[in-house]
Amino acid sequence: MGNDREKVVLAYSGGLDTSVMVKWLQTEKNLDVIAICGNVGQDEEDLEWVKQKAYNMGAIYSDAVDLRKSYASRVLTKAIAANALYEDTYPLLSALSRPMLAKYLVDYAHKHGAHYIAHGCTGKGNDQVRFETCIHALDPDLEIIAPVREWDLLTREQEMEWAAEHDVPVPTTAAKPYSIDDNLWGRAIECGVLEDPWNEPPADIWTMTVNPEDAPDTPEYVTLAFEHGVPVTLNGEKMKLLPLIIKLNEIVGAHGFGRIDMIENRVIGIKSHECYECPASLAIIKCHQALESLVLDHDTQHYKHQIDQTWSTLIYDGLWFSQLKKALDAFIASTQEFVTGEVRFKLYKGSMTVVGRRSDYAIYQYGLATYSEGDTFDRSASKGFIDIHSLQSKTWSQVQGPGAHRAAEGHDFDQF
Image 1 (cartoon, rainbow, N blue to C red):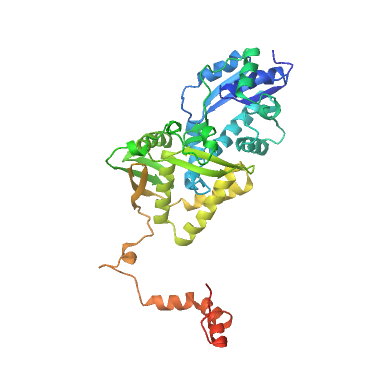
Image 2 (cartoon, rainbow, N blue to C red):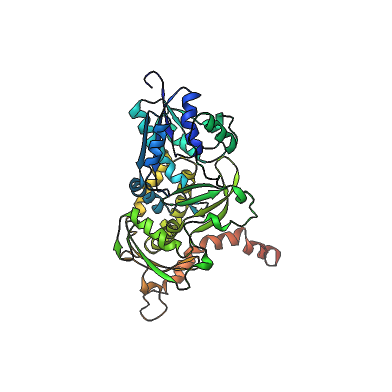
C-alpha cells in the first residue's frame, strides 16, 4: 500500500479536525498520509497515543516528536533576548512554535519524498499564514493542502457525522466551548463567550494560574539569574531552560500572575478578543528587561526597544525565516553580551513586581546617581552641556519661533 500514490505530511494533533483529515486526505485526495505530531510543551507529555491513532486510521508513517528542549534552547532564548511581546502586551506563543513545527514537517517531507504538506488551520486565523509562509521559505517547491479551506464540513457536528461514516475514532467528550493552543511558553484561549469583548473571561478558562483573589496572602520573593540574556538559575538553583520554565510556571501561577485579556490585531486584518495565560514567560521577560535597563547604555536600550517590537511583529506575521529577522537576530545577540546578573521580584495576588537587580556589568553607578555622600558627579559641567544641547532650540526660536514672534509682535508666542 502507498507505493503508487503520492505522499502528504500532515501536522497532526490527534483531535477531531486532524483525525478527520487523516482519512479525508486518503479518500478525497488519494494520498498516503505521514502524520507528524510535535510536542512543544502541550499539557500531555506522552503523545504516543497520537502516533498510534494515526496508524490505526491508515497512515503509512506516524511520529510524535519531543521538541521541547530544542524549542526552549533554539527558539525561546531568542524570544527572551528580544523581549518578544506582540503589541507590547503578550509573549508570542503559537507564533513561536509554528516555525519549528514547520521545519520538522519539511524535514519529514524530504525524508519520505512527499510532495505535499497539510495542516488543520482555520481559514481566517493567523496560523495558516505562519505555517505556509515558513514552509514556502524552507522549500518553495512543496505544495500545501489546507482541508478546512476546501471541505464543506463547516460545523463540528458535520465533522462528527463524516467521521462516523468513515470509521474515524473521535473524542467522546462534549465539545469544548473554547479554542485553546498551548505550549511551554503559555496558553492562548479564544472563541465561545470571549467573542463578545464586553464579557469578562470566565473562571474556567484559566488553568495555569489561580484566581488572584484566592492566591496566598503572603508575598513570595523569587530570584532569577541570567547569563548573556538567558535564564540559568532559579532561586539559587542552576537549571536548564526547559525545567526552569516549567518550575517558574508553577511558582508564578500559584500567585495568579500571568493573565492577559486583550483585543488583538490579526495578520489577516481581523480584530480578535484573545486571552492568554503566560506566568513564566511574562515574568522572565519583565526580569530580562529590568536587567537590560541596568547594563545597556541609553541609546542602545532605547533603540533596542524599537527592534524588539519589529522582531515581535515579524514573528507574529510568520516571518521567522526571513532576511530581516536574521539581521535583527544578529543585532539583538550583540546586545546580550553583558546581560548577566540577577533580578529579584515579588509575587502577590496577581501582581509581579521587580524589586531588585544587580550585575557585575552594571552601567548604573552609585557615585553618579546618589544625592548623598559619595556623589562624584561634576555639576559644573552641566551648564556647558545644556548650552550645547539647547543651542538648536535657541537658534530656531530666534529666527522662526517664540523669540522671533515676540520681537516682531510684542507679545508671547502661544504654542498651546
